[in-house]
Amino acid sequence: MDSQKVVINIVDQLSSVNFGIWNAAIASAETLSKTYSVRSILVAPVSTFEFNKEKYPFIEVIRVEKTGLGNAKAFFQNFNSQSTIVASHGAWQFPTKWGNCAKTLGFTWIYTPHGMLEPWSMNQKKIKKWLYFNLIESKLANNASFIRAVGKPEAENLSRHFPRVKLIANGIYASDIIPIEKPTVPIQILFLARLHIKKGISPLLESWKKSKLANTPNFVLKIAGTDDGEQQKVKFFLNQNPELNIEFLGPQFGEEKQKLLRNSHFYILPSLSEGFPVSVIEAMAAGLIPIITEGCNFPEAIENGLAIETSQNVVMLISTLNALINWSEQEREIRAEKCQLFVKEHFTWEQVAEKQYKTYFVNN
Image (cartoon, rainbow, N blue to C red; front, top):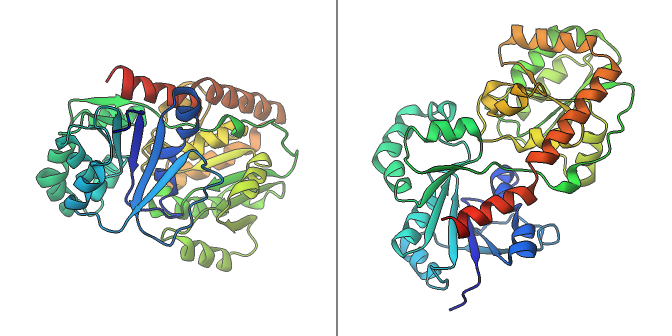
């Protein structure tokens, strides 16, 4: 049986809505392959989603038709348990059961919930989740070789439930660190995230309407993202308020996304809960100043004086937005450079891959 080092990443779905999780699962694959000769596999159920093989040339995608435990055992028989790491991503779905199955077969299993066990998320469908977590999920997860947290606050929260928690944050590609050449006007505030209720798009729109920025012609709010339940609310709000300096762009990928980042000055994410907000560090890498909440789980950005802290409270959001008028161009440029340098020094996928390799294969 092949003794090459392998990481099998298991996700519950390949879709645009689930992009954040499955992309984070495989983003370090190129460095793992080139630097450490590690083979990366992505396992997901069969779907119509078109996986971009050109963008991810170092990933082998295996789509499974059935996700029962019998199918899991048959699947893992094709791999060497001594040189293969099994990483399940997310909670509640079949990846946890497959990860536990792999552990019983002698594999190292890494359980990564990606923020799904954070307090806000656990309070949604609270009774159902509490029962399932205590009766099934936590018992299976406790069998994992260790639990991977992707942010400091998540690591602290997970440590309340599990004894073996290790922090390996997510990152960005070095190519996402681009020259900072922002237009003087308009001052562009960007919301780029899934249009989900927890991301705070509705209170952001309400706050913008009541803020001074709504009546300041050299400011604009741009909203981009894949629909996850809130798009109709966004469109209804904009139809009711056509005079506002807000543009809705829908999903943005590739060069369109990069152009949007290059031309934006502030990145706003008034989220209630994140595992670790990769979108924030992507924005910082492009020279955007982040406006984030405690729920974004990125205290490092606030503690280092890089991010502006806000909340979903409309009064506070209005105050945060109004304060942006007082920023000079020089202040924006200085903060943007500091944001970019911080990401470059701490949060590239190359650095993540090094931590993964050492944690998975050397110090495990």
